Image (cartoon, rainbow, N blue to C red; front, top):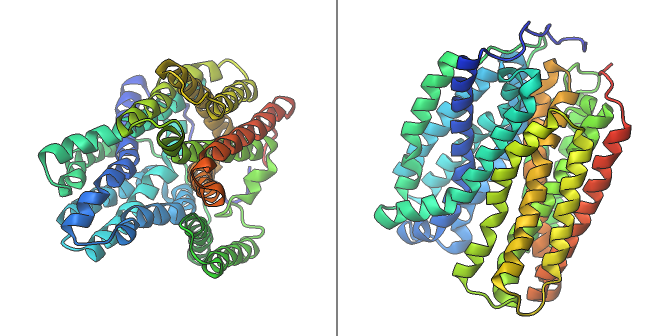
Amino acid sequence: MAQGIAAPLPTDGLPPEQRRWAAAAIFTAISMASLDTAIANIALPAIASNLSATPADVIWVVNVYQIAMVATLLPLAALGEIIGHQRVYLAGLLLFTIASVACALAWSLPTLLIARVLQGLGGAGIMSVNTALIRFVYPQRMLGRGFGHNALVVATSFTLGPTIASGILSVATWPWLFAVNLPFGVIAMLIGMKTLPKTMRASHTFDFPGAVLAAGCLGLLILGIGSAAHHATTGIVVGEIVAGLLFGWLLLRRQAGHPAPMLPIDLFRLPVFALSAATAICSFAVQGLAFVSLPFYFEEILHRSQVETGFFMTPWPLVVAIMAPIAGRLSDRYSAGLLCGLGLAMLGIGMVLLATLPPEPSVANIVWRTVLCGAGFGFFQTPNMKALMSSAPPGRSGGASGIVATARLTGQTTGAALAAFCFGLIGHEGATLALALGAGFAAVGCVMSLLRVAVKSTPLG
């Protein structure tokens, strides 16, 4: 056991009744945080019109939320190991709910951006310890099922987000997109306060300078990737990325020898953990590449309408939602390396098949390919999350949970930036190149996943 980590609480999950209520609180909050990005994207034109903002300025409504979230994931995950994951989760949910009301009451773009930063901090509090809490809510024999339910909620929220946003905007103004979080946030808070488990606490203190360095590192790196995607000048992009790397170097020097470093380099000494994290980044990079490039591919290359494009995009997250709990149950019985390798192989083949569609394909020809991609991604996601979380010691669940969320957002951002680079390189034909690049990432992830079959899980020394 690593120095500075308190002994595990003598429990293997919660009693069935309490577990169901605790899961309801966790999944309600994670669905709110997941829905929010999709809802905000749909609302951007209405917000720009109402607040007299330009399209270039209003995009920051999405950007500041993502940057605030990514920058604070690891510090909040580390804080959860010290004060208890349930406290960070409930505080994040409270801040997210209050900030949602502030977004609804915003009277100008600057006030909305400030509220969105606070909402991003609240979302980070939810997401940073989400998977750590699931590890303590479900017994070991049901962990795969628990992570599968989590993936199901996220995928369903992502699928329904645009529909829910469009429905609200058809009968109300954009502030209601944020105000609707209030009743759900209050209900989840009340349930969570009574049912969420009290988790183990580490004996070391929170490193505030380290938290600033971690936030600066990830925030600047994500900002640099986003700047490159939006064709900022080379000087700005290089400056942001170099500054982020400098913050990361200073963080590693400061926390060398720390029993639970904020950037959990110690966990990457575990081969299964390192391979699972790298595989997650690859898979979410595939998703980022696909979700940015496919709308252009369908409309500009296959000459389909916007309505048809929306229809073609729906099967991916919908099938993920169906496959995630199935894969979760299988991961309680079979090797995660094999299951994830199979899923990424399916995802890679689906990407290749999409990139090589004939000039005038039928609807069925397009749909079954996107179904294959969604099935592969859904088959990968839950077993990989279980492998990553289970390979870390219980006392380091916060750091592992932070890496789960960071890997997802880093992969998605990188994929989106690479898709933008492909478009900048060869115009609309870059959509095909982006799909091919996604297939390459899936192949690399598949190989890394299969390597886990031969690697023994060893305890952290």
